Length: 617
Image (cartoon, rainbow, N blue to C red):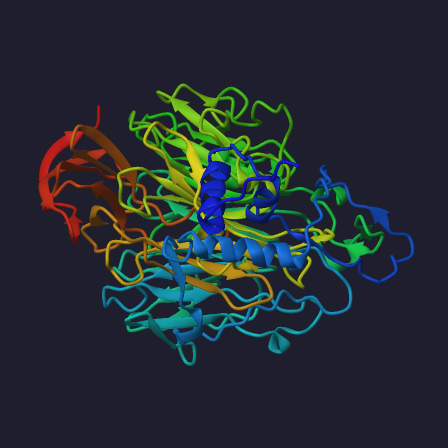
């Protein structure tokens, strides 16, 4: 009998198989199973379904791929043996950071829908010392008094990856049923203010300097009741005062809760479609000095939806800010600014209401960037398990084309998870935008990544030289696989080293604090773009020359999911030592030129300190 040939170096053979697997070519099925990082089956929960429960209507049931826990462990060992630990892009430093926050979803004895969406946060310089501080939004039980809920928490950045709890006496300890956060200077005093979305009245917290805030909700004419999710500041009427858009999810109260069951036949959370109660989102106009008026009806924002994500930008390239809203199980909205205080939904006309799969997906997080350097803003929306991401390529501000397949996202590893937070950042500073997605289930499944049946690992995708994306291994970019119920992914440079970091808010757990430790990162340049008052110039557009490329980046805080992100503009430069021909188009259309800048630091661009060039064409 002829003997079967064996590799002289099994470890090297396995490593080769991992490389082939990443390219979509697998020879050895055993190694493929070990390296695919598929979840293990879990035992079925023993709870009986509630009386009168109806099946949930989430559209896709995952294909079962049984894999024992030993397989997952072996996969991790293979990754380490092949250099996975050395190739990790991030280090989770939550354990020694001083951030002791533990998120409380509010779940006690019965499942209530708002418990599933909660988990937001913010990165912003709350005390004006130049570095990013952390604000974490707490959930808490719904059917109790406000005093019985745990408060939101504020942490001051001490440098070196360390933080201290600065909540006591700060005025930021809101005890609503928290969802997300937005940051913007509503009174133009140079201090960033906080807006907290809740199930129930939202809160506006006015920054008085030095890490102290006061509740300005009532005085501002805010505090509208509802189920607020993501929110974003913008100056939609270009009057110099930041207005606010608040996405709302469902018209809901505990007495309207419905009973749903999962694939086990046990009680679980429902699809929003079970409620038949989409909500109307809010457009709040700043009348000056942080006093707001609800102008949703007058502005034409009257359509109802199940809004979870929002991103602002000038999508039609007319110099006025527009709004893209990701809806869960309903068509997306693209609110185009008519320059007279009104908006018109042109998502269908612009071909971004649904993608080429011809169905309304479960849109959650969203963001927009000029991915192909053609001068207009492209969109990405992340969706439910077994639904692809939706990548909409902007065609000169006239319409969008679904390029999900061309971007290599249609068969991406990300579609095997339910994605919430999302950001497009150049994590390795090679000049190409990468994608990070925060994942977590909304319904228990028997394939488990952890004891928590809702937990999933996050995903990091690298931007490729010829366009498109591929997954970075080890999964999620960390040496240790992190499988949790992730919601908000908040992006910013926490240690000012030019590497973009990620704060991930995890439902019912501690957050993940991912410091960028990618080896061999390229050069970079950063910009804080400020109005003359000193506030971050949200809605301004930065254009610069990076070698032969013309790069466009937005000054933006509100994107991802339930998140307020670092408003500074970060640009990866690869092997270049400087950026050239930096210009700012301010939110009111005026343009200033600021010249060239060296790589390796953050630069301040203040209105009035550049060379004026007049109005945008």
